[in-house]
Length: 527
Image (cartoon, rainbow, N blue to C red; front, side, top):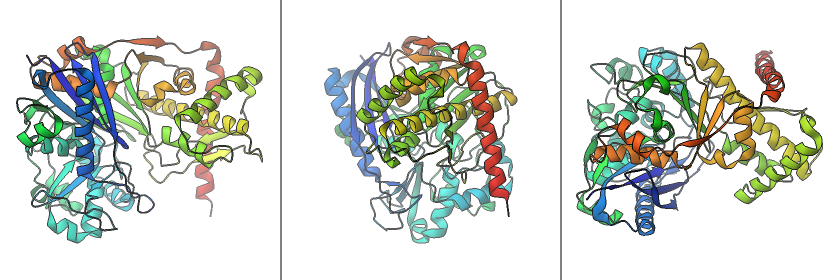
């Protein structure tokens, strides 16, 4: 009986796999690292075969840990970062790297090589931009493709397939050229709510009129929860599964996390609209759903049916959050390589110093966290970070103060996003957490107190894997739809309410945060 599913999450640094039963219980989990090439500033590349191999290793390990028989796995699902995979006309690897190394065929989501191309797209003011916050990010696929065509014309002329990374994984698994509605709507400017999803006039305007033909991109997309086929013999052998195993349509990792975090509300859209998923790790993504189209500036979307049928999705985000804390640790004289143990040491010392000094701890340090641009709500990939209030202190306690105030700025950046969302008609009041930040007590306290929101911490902190498993369970008929799967598989969570005694302090901090944005703009505007 096919009463189990496998979920694979391809992140920035590793591929993870989980084996789930029909009730959402995680029976086995494994992880395997993936390679990243950083040949120059703003360039980041993966080897897609390395990613596939890592996923297969992780699945085999997770299956072994679970004790589940391959014959009982009804479906496997893949989620991934919104990285761009390029293959030649024969489906073989082809370089996207200025270094020319063939295996580096994937431009990583965080790669910012296409800043100029993104600005060009924004300047067109085309109607497609109404569904990406009226701006184009270099993290989207169109600017990357424009860069590729201009800077590596040999690669472009030899290209035969373009994939979002999640769609590449389903292609490797099944041989199907089906593309997910989730990936194309969110990252390729495909308008799923229109009769003709691809807007040919836009593609022509940005010089990609041959994109669909060259990349073998279909006219129609596959909704989340549908099967794109079953495993090929080669893929089944590599994964340690069977050829009866279905493969569900791929998902953007953050949206899989949103599905996993908010699955308990999938059957009640009116309540779902008040919930936000905050998937926070290297970067942070805030995802909300709405029954109505609510256009905005500085946020990605609204995307029609990027996850749930008949619902719009909007995403806001911070390009560097966990990565920013790593950077602070790495660059400070008292820091070093930002290991989990060093982060824990800093967090523990912060608790001691706050107990001793109270609100005065680090109070004169102010940070703008835009060290890798501002994704939301300013939609400015050129934005830079700011630190005010530094002294000659190079001690470990000095590092702790800077770390604490950087964490405050990250939470205030989240508040900035939430305030803008409210202006556009969204009504968020609860943050459902997922990702690595759940393990950081400093951030978890701040996400509640600095934003004024109730925070829900899941009983199982694997929302991304769970969301992918939920979609897979529908693809093989284990559950009839996403709502039923969410009801059956959502684990619930523990709530934390904001400390009302700290509201005035964080209101003041937020005013200072906004003032720093004004001051930065004033400095940059001076002749």
